[in-house]
Length: 197
Image (cartoon, rainbow, N blue to C red; front, side, top):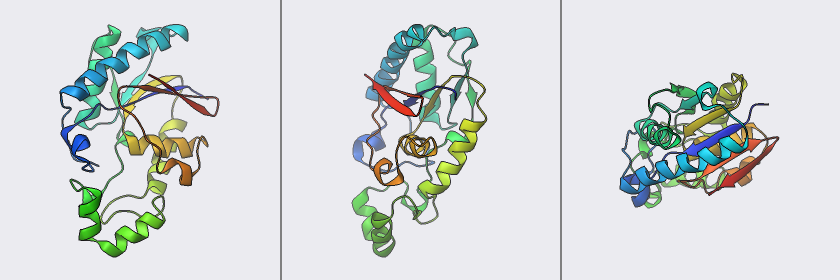
């Protein structure tokens, strides 16, 4: 079972405002850029302790710009060429459909009945025109099953929650409200996840 060194992209202005981004390409703000560099600094020590050769290590990112920018900044902090990584669409953020760009309060006003349904079952009920966590779990598991070795990945909070369930680290009930921090590194190994900050 390959180890995953997982980094959530750095902060964006929509993160700071509590707006759900989903598939929208919102750039990193200055805080987010600093978090990306910090993740790279943390990875330097973590990968050295695990005796990884950076030249042979796969790096894979979500195709969304905030994840790619985070990957390039953390690779710079690691001292390797910023663009030496792959993209995988299976790592994109959960799609929030019509709710992208909205805060929770705006979601509730726009679709009160669906919002209430989703609050009761955040894992199984998709946003209007969006994806459920259950469906994201399938694509994230498919990505994990394709890995041949330990991998560094930059992705999203929703994607990490789905990965936690896909790898039996958490249940849907516990994962759905798990805070996924920025500027840290999560290591998935041996059926557990540890945070490095």
